Structures are given as C-alpha cells and as structure tokens.
Amino acid sequence: MTSSIPSDADARRAEPAIVCYEVNQLPAYDSNLFDTARVSMKKVDEVTVAPRDANTFNVKAGQFFRIVSVEGSQVGDLNLWNAHNLHERFFSGKTRQLHATHVSTGDRLWSNLPSLRPMATITHDTLSWYGFDQDGAGVHDVIGTRCDPYTNFQLKGVDYHYCCHSNLTRALSVHSNMTLEEAEPHVHDVLNVFMCTGFTLDTHQYFMKASPVRPGDYIEFFAEIDLLGALSACPGGNCGSSHSDDATPCYPLLVEIYQPEADTLQGWQQPAVNGYDRTHGAG
Image (tube, rainbow, N blue to C red; front, side, top):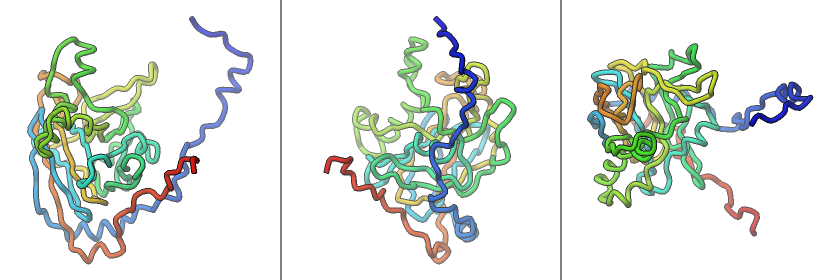
C-alpha cells in the first residue's frame, strides 16, 4: 500500500545533501613519500591464488603489496587482519563512509572499532582511469559483502563450496591452524578488488558488470601495520555474468610483496590505535 503524498513532499526532497564525515582532518595522502619509496622497492615474495580458491599472505609494516591480474579478467575478494591480532580487521563500512563506494590511489583501508586506524593505503591503481561509467559503476568497491554459500543456498537451494566466503574461511583455517568453525567468524566484508559495480538507477539494486581488468593490471597498497591478508579468486571470474557456480571462466591472481629501501620512508610512522577513551559516557 502506497502512503499518501504530503503537500510539502517536494520541499522535503529538496533538502541539501550533506556529506556525513568532514575528512579534512585526516592525514593527507603523502604522494611524494610513497612515490619515492616505490622507486627503490624490490620484490621479496609472491603468492599465487588459484581460480575459485583463496590463499593467505603476510606483509610487514612499511612494505608494499600488489594484487595483479596475470592470465585473464578476474575479480578478487580481499580480507585483511592485524597479523598479531585477528580481532582487528578491515572495516569496509567505515572505509566506505570515510572515502567512497569505490576506492583508489590515496584512499586508506581502515580497521574496525575500537582500533579504527589505517591498515593499508592504496598507492597505485592501473584502473584509476575507469572512474564511473554511464551506468554509475566503478571499480574496487566496498559495497558488496562477498559471495557466500548461505545466501546462495537461500536463493538457489543448493550447496556450493567455492564462494569467496568459503574460500577465505578455508585459507584462514589452514594458515592459522584453526578449525573451519573457529576460522569462519574472522572472515569479514571485503574489498572487491577489480570488481565493477554500482546501483541500478531505477530499482537502486546492487549490480555487477564485466570487470575492465586485463593481465598486467594491478592495485598496490602500502602496509601501515603488520598484515595478514587473504585473497579469493572469485568463482564469478570477471563478474560479467554469474557467480557462486562453475559456469564462468576463472583465472589466478598474483600477490606480490615489495620491500623499499628504509631511508625512503623517513617521516612515516605506524598509525596508533584510535585515541577515544572508551568510557562511552559511563565514567
């Protein structure tokens, strides 16, 4: 049943839009620092993520890491944790509020409460040219949660074990020597790397379209703290047709770890955990 339209409906809709967070007090992105450090960095490790699977990797604070397309157009789902405390992890919702629905060079990936600090900073993105297309879609979103077997079962009534949620759960279980039941609660909402998404203009539903990523493209991050990462090569491939099944061609992804020369990071410091006193008005 549609509610009646009030006489001042147009005036209510005409209220100005106000960005929720004034972020001018956040530390500015120091492009000179990172560009200088990138010149000297050398690759020290790499990890391959097989199609429809996930793998983990470690990055030390002060290192860079890249997620690279190597064989075909492929989307990845990224989880990040504090390497010393799995309870501190990437907070996609707050990252979205502080930056935007899609992230690129200069944006930070923030950790959850109560730490709320930068975990990684995006320092290069070969897909930054894409911007937003005629459908309102952009690349590298912090909107979607990750494909998972529970939603798939709810909608299709079948078990599918290679959704990104399951892939990330298996990878964390193996890395941390936890059971699947122990590992699963640590898996969290992701950065959808290379994924091209938006909201439909008519029904405002979350949509995906074929990713513009091609072999050789990458997104690069600077580790602000010691990180444990897990990356899933999504069963949706380039997410241009379907996901949560084996119907779409899928390709591996590569994670590369880089070490810059120490003297190029002079002036950089690891971010401290958030300074709020945590009394919540009770004392």
